[in-house]
Length: 268
Image 1 (cartoon, rainbow, N blue to C red):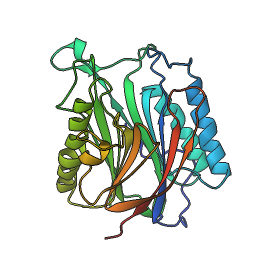
Image 2: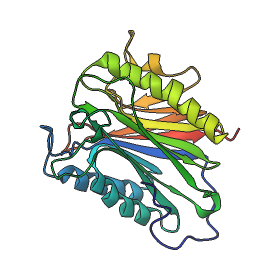
Image 3: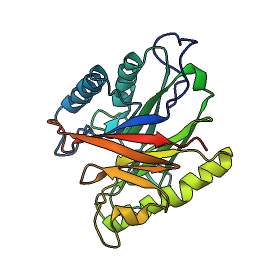
Image 4: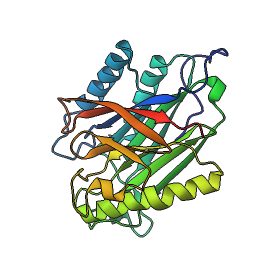
């Protein structure tokens, strides 16, 4: 799902894409199924955080969310559009797949029967907007769980690649293979297909810790990439750029904090 724009009429004098971006990563536990579900209050809390950050001069440029329903992403989009009036705002939804639906799995469903998965949203100044190409898929490596994990990426033509993912929680070995698949196979293939190597930002709940050992998140990240995280399972990985300062915000209505990371873009 990549709407071409939302919000107000673009301002023709808007400046090009900035040299750094703020990425807000949140696992909102809003499927209606997991124990951490709080009757949708995590969505309201996320909206309030976005508005609070905007009011303090730290408005997020990219918002990545895990464990949400399709309509949650649809409801977040106009919030971002109001934060960035005059810009193109866009969203992409990557549904998890339901193994129980057969050899060609259908989207996993929230309790409200909406597709369940991850989403990423962003904005682009009109001077820099040249179209968006989506890439959504499920991993070859999966655990035995009914929910098959997925990724979603958007190529903002001439600007950057922005991705969201939620890796396996059942088996850290599977999560590690999924991490490698996305960062070392899927994304390089996407770049070759589009013919551009630009900054890539991958945000999500990796279900991998930053710790020594074979299955630490650092070992799945390609050389030359940078990572920051919430000191637990959520991470922002950058290739073709660098990570800067980050902040962690406690969340009351989900079992993960929110992570705000600054990313410097490469102009090479």
